[in-house]
Image 1 (cartoon, rainbow, N blue to C red):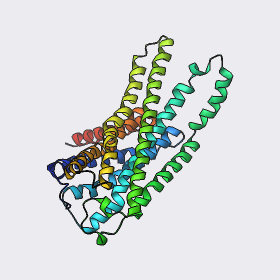
Image 2: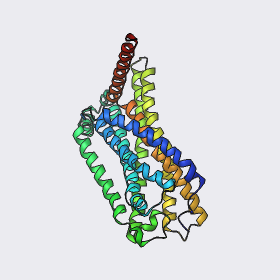
Image 3: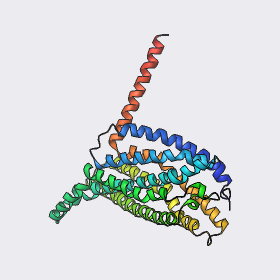
Amino acid sequence: MNSTDYNSVFTKQVLPPLYIVVFVLGLCLNVVAAWIFFRVPADSALVVYLKNMVVADLLMLFSFPFRLASYLGFKSQYLDAIMCRYTAVLFYFSMYVGILFIGFISLERYVKIVCLSPSSSTTPSSRRRFSAASALHLFQSATFARALAVLTWGFLFLCSAPNCILTNSLSKNQNYTICMDLKTVLGKEWHQASSHVCVTLFWVTLLIVTFSYTSIARQVCKTYRRMRRDTSDICRKSNRSIISILAVFFICFVPYHACRVPFTLSQKNTSIFSRETSFWLFQIKEGSLFLAGMNVCLDPVIYFLMCGTFRKSLLRKLSRRERRRSLTTAQSLSNI
């Protein structure tokens, strides 16, 4: 099997323009998000987590041009070496960093709204709940969030770095089909083990996200109904935030993780999987990988809906720009 056996109309003609659109749109959105966020002080755990998500998205965007060049057929020994050793690893590394930070955000919101809400602490066992609340407050501190961020980046780096190191140079294997063909024996074992670890992290995070936001939605609606106020606007805003998080997971990440394990097994056990099966698993994997890459465009929606500071800063800057444009137009008309 040569390197062209996995090519198809889908990978050569459909995916490239889609990646171009996502790259341009994601770059614009995340540059604006970074420009706003890094003017905002990281005085809460939520802001710390969101800033780290912006960094992860920008790193993922850096890998897009190399993936696009591969789809368009720009083959060279050096380009393949860069892709297999670095940019492909960078893509997965940044994706799982972003996934874990979404999980941390979900837990932070759950602790704040469900565990530390006044209605959940004024019960007969209030003394016990107060002692638990004092411990839960730690999870909301910016210092704890920074320490958790460092551990997250460090752990995933240790999982990803061997995939760069345990890859042979192209000169040792000219008849390669995919990046797995360039790995050492230990590299293939490490790739499979790290894949299982990352997939497990995703499914655990998905359970956390689903549980957290289901509990939050129930708590918000129950609390405001109890207060007998018109809560339609509050519940609607809460539901928008919940739907945005769940949409990112179910649209972007679930399809890829549903097919990742069988695809990884097909790479390692070529004698068990037929050529046709491997071909179709590759096509499905590439399509679901594109959906995973779409999170660079959807994450800014999460920032806007969940972070009031980000939303106010963006709207304020847009209003200033609109006023400046109006003044410029008025001055131009007055000079006619």
